[in-house]
Length: 269
Image (cartoon, rainbow, N blue to C red; front, side, top):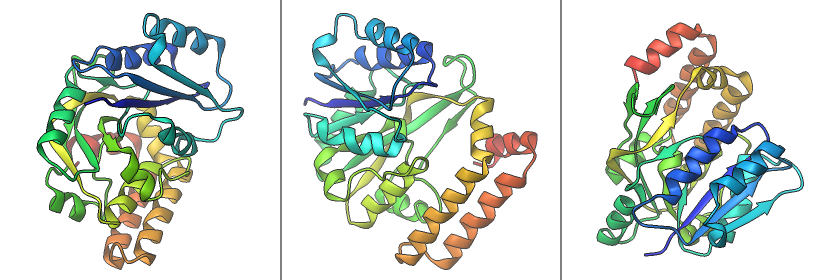
């Protein structure tokens, strides 16, 4: 089964991490024949050189799209998904690392379980070296558990996902929000009756450093997450109790000291 890869890059991304990420997708045991890379606005000369380096010898599969200005991850993915020539699309973030058999495992699962629109997995979170993960981020596996979990939290690890292009577009495509566009998209897709599952093994190494904690404490991200769940409540996808829980937890993240937040991530997730 052929599949596409969808990735974005923007000017503040690390060329080193970008090359590692692309390399992990090009070295999959089942190769892609279509790699859609969206440059979200002008990028640096270092990143341009990184693109040349990363795709040397694989130029024929690269579909490089340069957006004239930075529009944010949500809009970039919204623009990029219809450009993928295969119906199954592997999402990848440009600072994470896929395991060599990630796509093979996901495609095999898709072939054995018909009617799916989203297939994801666990991730290994790491700070410095991917071979030394600090924890495994597990997500619910079964469809029923995913639906229940999604009332309060994001049920998928975004950079692990293999998604059905036609189904996601039919459900409204990617949300164009700058942040939290993934949970806004997946909850909407699930709410429209499309099916998603997770494979109970880590297939991606997720970079989780000190800046990750900082970003999650930023008020703009906290407020946007609360707004997302307010909309879910108004659309009757979750209860007021679910919405209140999200508000409480997001405010707790905002006011919690950094070291306590790190402890909570290590022990309470």
